[in-house]
Image 1 (cartoon, rainbow, N blue to C red):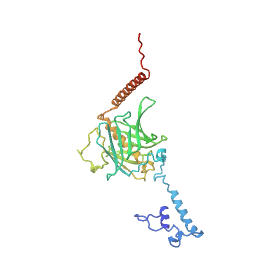
Image 2 (cartoon, rainbow, N blue to C red; image 1 turned 90 degrees about the horizontal axis):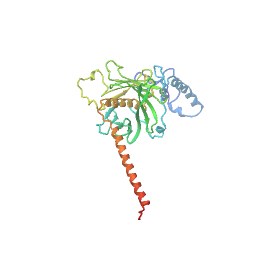
Image 3 (cartoon, rainbow, N blue to C red; image 1 turned 60 degrees about the vertical axis):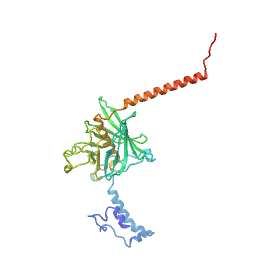
Image 4 (cartoon, helix red, strand yellow; image 1 turned 90 degrees about the vertical axis):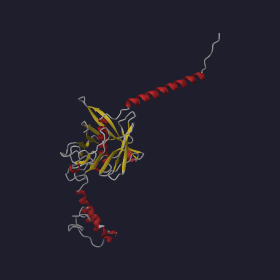
Amino acid sequence: RPQQWLKCSGHLSAGQPGHPTSPPASVPQMEGSSANLGGSGPRSLRRLLPLLLLSGGSVSATSWDHPPNGLVGPHGQPATLAQDRQACGFLLLPATVLMRTHPAGLLQHGGIWMSTDGATFLTWEQERFRWSPDKVYYYRGAKMLFKTEPNTKENDDGSTTQIVILQDCESVPMYSLVVRGQEGRFEYDIHDQTGDMVARARYDTAKDFPNQLLFTDRFEMPIAVAESPAITNLADLVEGQHRPPEYAIRPWQVSFYGATTTNSSLMLAQNRWVIIAVVQDHAIRVSGESGQLPDFRPWFVGVCVAVLAVVVAVLSAVSRLINVAVYPPVSREI
């Protein structure tokens, strides 16, 4: 219909205030009703041709890859093979996500990502009694979506840099996080598969809200903001409000900005998990600084060594019994 074509060209947005509800004078008017456009033949094509040219010109002039500020950053990276095969899957998230933690157990802790009305998007867990207790696994139902693996990189000057690798369910790297800062105020640089920095997370970007973690693209344009236990303004700051224990993983809230100032691919619903995974790593890292979370790695190694010793002893005894049964000892009588 003509009205639909005009919507695509940006000249008509029916139902929105401040927009015309009829085509402007510069748009050529077509004869007949909209039903006449469904006909076939050269006459119908001649009627549609001016409108198609006008629509194509408007769409090409306003590209989705260019925000109003004209700054163009890296495009979104393609999905991994496991995501294409739907072995890992995608996670579509809204503009506001709440992060809550389950009561911590002795050998593991975890939590959920949820909406403001209580819908659960995914669950995550971190097993403490295993060979790699620092890995965090994220699930949607019984299917793993992705996991995070901390690592350490040695620099040329002898210093070390903490890095977190975001991998899909088949351990294929997707993003890498360079961790900076200490004492509960960690900041991050987010890099894609090619090593290009696509976003960063910084504190102290707003004078009145020093505890907010702001995510920006490579041009310092805002992507999202996060704060614990929730995003507040000056009217919401209350002295003496209840807070969880220092060693507990604190709740967080993450809210994304609109797509009017940045063309970052992390604004897309299927890529917002990267930003929230950074906040989750920050929350787990801060809780581990207090030293209240036990490190069961030495116990795990000890149990593995003990089990291995028992298995070796049992195999040795069975082998000796088999040898005696097959080759019984010969008694020599004098």
